[in-house]
Image 1 (spheres, protein in one colour):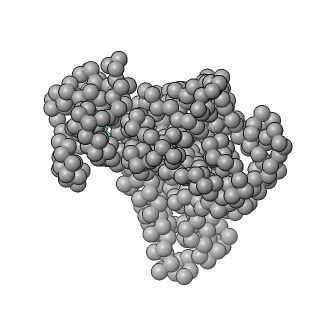
Image 2 (cartoon, helix red, strand yellow):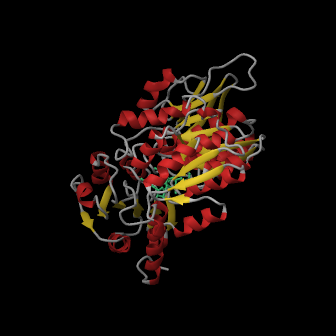
Image 3 (cartoon, protein in one colour):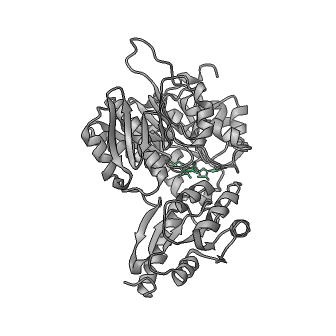
Length: 469
Ligand code: UMA
């Protein structure tokens, strides 16, 4: 086990891949291409994985389902690569560890094979937007960038393709960070830490510790070294501020407040870069296409990360203004008949809903609910009580959320019914906001599926002339 970091996935190495979703299938494909012998395992029954098995058959990767076979495959493997959705205390993972085989996450495997330097972004909310925006800013300043990770396309696939002169911009989740051993980003970005995933972590402290792993392997400034690691953090976040002293490398910070130590600040309505040369206004808040103050913070973090590694130019600041909001993140999908329909399906925790509610001045009809991640809905309920004219609740946690809201609440059984109820209550000038505060898995395949079902139901209304054509 002491030699485990030496496994670099070269020809002849032997790896076990645990979980055959997007992360596992990409890992198997990349490792096979490098000549690694791979065996895969998944908890699902064989009849639930016919597509995955066909994909693995094509690259000569046997797929195991029973734990006895897993035990002997683990004993034969030098290393196991774990999918992020599988917790470390999963019985199959414990079997693999008992066989003496180290278990790492896919981002650790990606780091070990990557020729390109990595900019890694984590945080409870905003990491996809910030990751994509860093890629956009780098390209605007003439640098080459690839974006991947938790955002959807597994990092290992991008790492395998990226050349040494490109930047690998990686969205990394706490799940992925749990399984790193040597992962050392050139730039790490920590946006915020709010209650989430408390169905996986015993406490907020443990969730925050997983996030802090993003800077764990970064190194102090070294005279004469070819480059310096940097941490970019949100100075306004109390958990991040409290951990600042633990960061082993030079840091840069951003703040929506007036923190004078920060490199990027909000002054009145303008994002301002502070440097030895004076103040540079970068963009006014209303020049960004993204909505909400939290996205101003994301823009600040992205600007800092991009300009720490690529030349700063007028084009970089201009690119802040051309970046389009991402799908399912406060995305306006229709404005028919004066009603603005907004898909924020990626708001999967209560803090994200609060921020979404704060992003509008208009009367709001909120559609929320789904599978709870064992977070407290009190703050979200208080914000909904203050800001909504109606809250429509769906999913497993509907009643639990409903109990926290003072004001009109309706309970419905489907997204289609929720959209109908919203259309019946909405008047011109209102916002109908899908911002669930929960995961989607009780009723939908994913948050994307939930957003798509919302959009389909909204466009169905046009046919029924509920929102006008
Ligand atoms: N599985 C088991 N045992 C378990 C759980 C799952 O065997 O106990 C198997 C399933 O049967 C399935 C596979 O594992 O075959 C699924 O693996 P996975 O859940 O890791 O999902 P992937 O499709 O590989 O997607 C993962 C990330 N999923 C999670 O972290 C839950 C995706 O993030 C990521 O985009 C993708 O890798 C590519 O990097 C999604 C996510 O929800 C968007 N992330 C969380 C979030 O953003 O809050 C962290």
